[in-house]
Length: 193
Ligand code: UDP
Figure 1: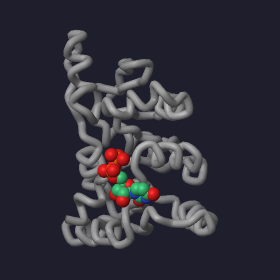
Figure 2: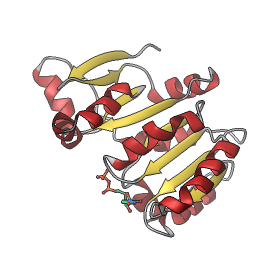
Figure 3: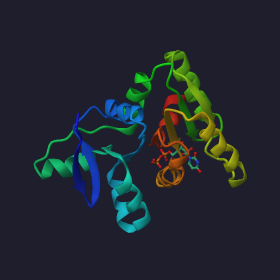
């Protein structure tokens, strides 16, 4: 399916297809994607910070994560459905086959690992090839970047909080150009239980 592009406060929102199918198609085409899960707070931040706005505008897929975004379009007569980022991440992971792989990056020490363990027991075919907490030092960056480059995961979930995760992805996306990169905020904390 084709995606339609709407605009809120100068930021794109994509709407129309099953996002997870669209993303896997992009991956198969070798294009990959940076996914942004937009809410009102991020839109307000972007209004004050042009660098963040530029990153959000460059996203290949921006989904309506927040109720405020959905309401904004409803008031303009455009009905779109809310899609929380955590739900997109879940439906995408559920669609991965053993040939695909996922990398969990972010959250406090132990949290991404616990989230990965929960996913592995729920979905044994899911290939989580790497896990790293979000409190690494800049000294650790070369090793982490080399790991991502070597692994070329299908999906890279980055939970470093807004806006750090958005900048982190934009800066490193070229390491894994075919990957689906998603800034997932507090999702690992929820999956860790
Ligand atoms: N986080 C991290 N490194 C940091 C700061 C935050 O890994 O330097 C993690 C934090 O532990 C949490 C996530 O980023 O798991 C941010 O979650 P939050 O719900 O605050 O997301 P936001 O609302 O910022 O998207």
